[in-house]
Length: 309
Image (cartoon, rainbow, N blue to C red; front, top):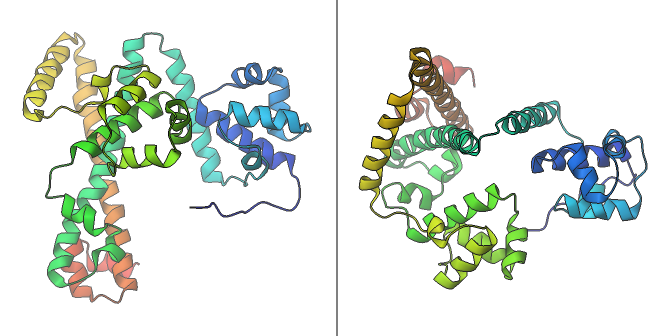
């Protein structure tokens, strides 16, 4: 789908500088990292990002290449909201924290913990949608407009996830870990961008030969991209490893942090996510003119909460 052109008619170096900064942070680069890639100093990058220094066309293209984007996209950057700026600072802080961890195994654990929390949040939101959707289907209400679930997503909740989709998700996971866009990976493998998208969505089956090529580009073994089919046995093995690692923690305080603080905090956040999703669905149902009784019956929120919408 072609991206809507929202470029200003006026060249604004502050806007370009903000776009350079956004993309640099997304890549996890420091100003020194980016400066090295385009053959300049970090002071120059700082001036670019503040919008206090003009950027030559040559440097604009060098910046675009280093940041895996186009000169047009950099020149067409949009102002960032306060929420966006706050998120940028969070990302920058995350990158700093990650670089403070020298041990590679601890870095991997940090990544896995972040992924675990992200998946928990997503699953909580989707679980609410599925739960509400089941009630709405019984009441004859459209689920796609009110829960943002497609019919396929609703149907797939009762089915096993396909192997092509699992393979695709592994490709996506490793691509992101290597810092590649879909375009980057497609270019390195020698196929069109659309094909990588189709692989990751499970819409096209990947041949073993192609999977091997992708694995080589990602600097991993092909087996890293092949999902396990004996999930129950894997779960048992993972559980044994978890218990073993837990027993190695000598500090009772750290054990407490792991079990109580971490998991209880995650549970509190999951409940908040569920409530937010329920309110979103309820708001959509109200817009669609669905009766209050059906909303109360299917969504699981109070009359007071509905009246606040």
